[in-house]
Length: 343
Image (cartoon, rainbow, N blue to C red; front, side, top):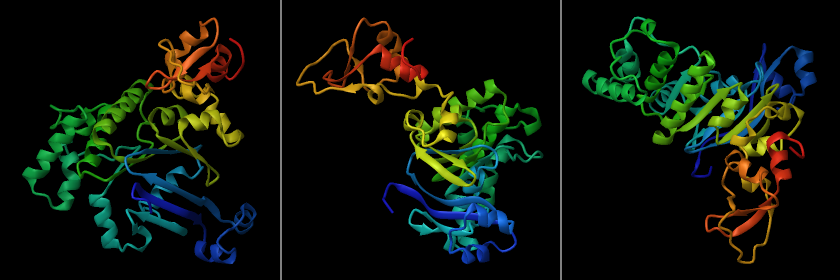
């Protein structure tokens, strides 16, 4: 396992049925869709392999029933996988006994779910401090840490409020603060914003980005919303029928979808906020040429679209030293923005 890989999943299966282990054994660990159908088993996760790198936001997405939430439940062993391996910082999670697993969840993993899961009879302070109470942390220390987390998510002054007195977005912030109170190494979020109305959801996405810039957590995030995924993710994995069909950066997924299923997700993506100039330029061996009016290869196409589309001819693309490394035409810009030639 590479030192920057925090979680390593290999050939993970989760089969539901009468005897999943026996079923896998009968089919040499590689059952087909026909085998599953004929014998009445459900392949919720099928031969899934991926790494989660330290400090990255990995988003796993797909339609309902694709297996995305089952993957996160297998990694945390809320559901034990039927087959495969899961390594966490070099430790075999599937070999961990119940005591070790509880210790890992309490001290190394933070979890946030769609339904918030707040305790209705406890106020904000007590809800956020609850995981530390379970750990046996003394009251003064846990309330100090809880207060820090409450301030971090912008709820200072509402420590004595009960969940019923908070809006949906505020309740979700309490859930986030509670999950961060244990200072987890890895943060798991399963559709945390899907129950919120669009305006609050956008606000929570911005809040999430702010927190990640400060905390730099390793994050596995589940969603069914491709636009949300492209806004938040370093990499996106798309699932279908239990399979991981593509795992790549948002830019790569938009420009080079693996199949029609992925292309359909990417079709309505906000390309102007995803695709970089460097990804669509025509490379050029500049031989020392520089340009003061060129556009940066690192810029998103939406940031320079007006300049390129209004240009009479070719626009230079430059690196951080203003050296020309490529060119861009209005036709290529238009195709990148709208998926067609011309404007």
